[in-house]
Amino acid sequence: MALIFATGMSATADDIGYLWRRPMLLVRSILAMYVVMPLVALLMVRLLDLPPKTEIALVVLAICAGAPLLPKKLIKLGGNPSYVFSLIVTTSVLAIVTVPLSLHLLAGRVSIEAESVTAAGVARVILKSFLAPLAAGMLVRLVAPAVADRFGDLLLRLASAVMAVCALIALAFGFHLVLELGLPTVLAFAAFTLMAIVSGHVLGGPNAADRTSLAVACASRHIGLALLVATTARGPHVLAYVVAYVLASAVVSVPYVRWRSRLATSTFSEVA
Image (cartoon, rainbow, N blue to C red; front, side, top):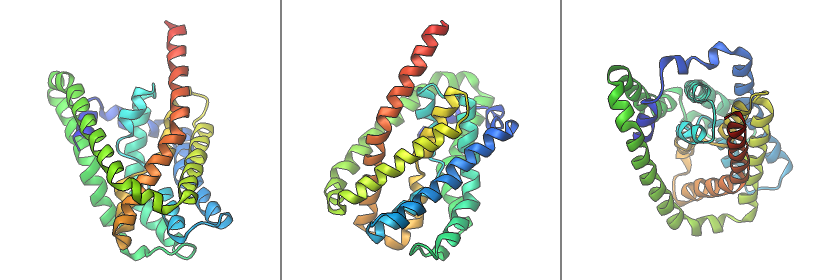
């Protein structure tokens, strides 16, 4: 919440509407995140001989797009801030409808209890973890821009440091569980992430910053929503699948992120 609050300190209402003023980019973004990736997950379930729980995890991750921590990550990579903010707000709001609807549509193909996840439950998670702190940060910027400029970056760095420590703790306590899941599960998550990056990069359009933003957005999942969907399977394996996905996603995403970061730096140097 602190990270999102700090991110909101650098956003404006005009940023939020950026994507809606560009309907073709909006359509491509929604297509990549909410159509292509669920289809990729279903195709992997049909073609690969994966453990049943891994199949469920893939489908759940595929429909839980709109990771709330993306703005900080993408802006550092040279992504268009207005597009990033608009994309995450738009996909988060759409998730209130798309997550329950997708579960009902996919329940017959994968063993998921769709009735356990409602639009109200999804809305509560998104409101509490993303929309409320983002709006609070934007309000601070509106009424006290000097305060936002002075403390926004500091809060962002502090919250990022705490998140890094938490991630290391989760990795330390959950790594042995990841090993129990087996190599096929980790490889499936890695393949899913690779397809997400390709999908976002292709559908991002001709603008390099938009391509990078959509590719990383497609490869990132809303872990809070995924855990909400997985409430019927509480226990250590839930943590194991989350940690396994984060590890596999990081391994696959890092080369792409470094390549796009170098490209953005090179382009900026040439323009300068």
